[in-house]
Each structure stands twice: as C-alpha cells, then as structure tokens.
Image (cartoon, rainbow, N blue to C red):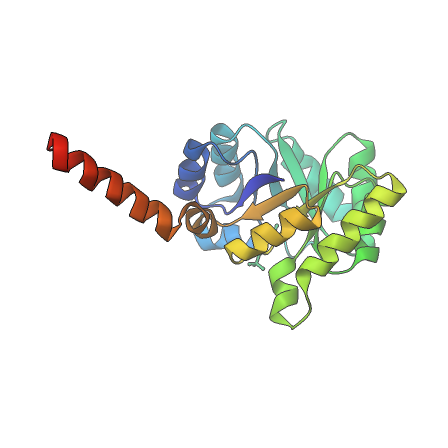
Length: 217
Ligand code: E4P
C-alpha cells in the first residue's frame, strides 16, 4: 500500500515529502478552505513539492456535469500530475466519463458503498476514495467497505486504484493495508503517530546511556 498525504497545508506536505514516505497528495474543499488561500496558488505550490498525483476537487457548489467538466479541464491544465476529484453523484459519473475519455485522471470521492465504487470504476475513474472514518463515525465498519471494493475490483479485473480516505488513526492505516487498499491518504498527524513506538524511544535511550557510560558525550 502506498501513501498520499491528505492536506492542503504546505508545511505538512513538505515534512511528509522530506521523510520520503508519500507519493501523492489529496485535497478537498474543506482542506483548501482551512488554508484560506487561492485554490490555484495552493495547488501549484503542492505540485512543485510532490512529484506524484495531486487531487484537486471541483468547486463544492458545482453540481452539474457540464460545470464539473469545465472546472475539471481547468484543474487538469494546472500541471500534468493533477487528478480531478469529483463527487460520487450521477452528474459526477457523467463528468468522470467525459474527463477520463480525454485522458484526464479522475478521483471519485465520497464513496460509501461498494456499488458506488463499481459505478465510478466503470465510468473510467483512475481512483476511488471510500471514506473509512466517516463510516466508523456512524457505527458502520469502514474497513469492511475497503475489503468489499478490493474483492470486487479483483473479481472484475478493474485497475481503478482504491484510495482509503478519511483516515483518523494508525489502526485505520494497518486495517486498510490488510483489506487491500492500494493507497491510504493520511493526515500528517497520523503519519507522525505511525513513526512512534515506546520501545523505539526506550531503545534509543538505552543505546545512548550505554554508549555515554563508556565513551562519554
Ligand atoms: C479524502 O480524499 C478526503 O479528503 C478526506 O480523507 C476526508 O477526511 P475526513 O472525513 O477526516 O474529513
């Protein structure tokens, strides 16, 4: 399973990129709004840092296929690594079909069922984004959705990649990797949590103490 970072925060993207663990970025309208900066400016900056797929979503207020297609073409023209993020609706599927047929990569987002993922894949999506955490929030096991989609895509021979999204903690990451997600898009906080283990800290301290006891500082 590969990692994308799920943020529009430039500092967090730089930190994760410097660690060498991420190969792409996902943003959404809420994450862009949180930064309070111009969409194009933020996206351009991200593409100059990470050499991999960068998902930029059509405006949250654009709900018709025609509008999503127009905006999708604009987003795709920002940089060759751009992926157009489109919400999972009937209009979104139409937009996905048109943009995909033009060679533009589409990430169909807000996926909450296996059937939605299957439809998106059939409409030509390069990526589908099932939202794990938001399902867990309503007492539905998000990881089961990842398992179902992964099984269905294998059976049907679909090469659409599964981006496990709405990841809230390190256990989600392990669960998604075991469930067959191709990619997990993870906030920086969770990447940081994943690096830590109390026995690693204790081990470092013991090595330092033993070394210093014989050789000094
Ligand atoms: C995915 O592409 C979304 O941007 C994101 O993972 C949503 O996460 P949230 O449910 O924590 O907002």
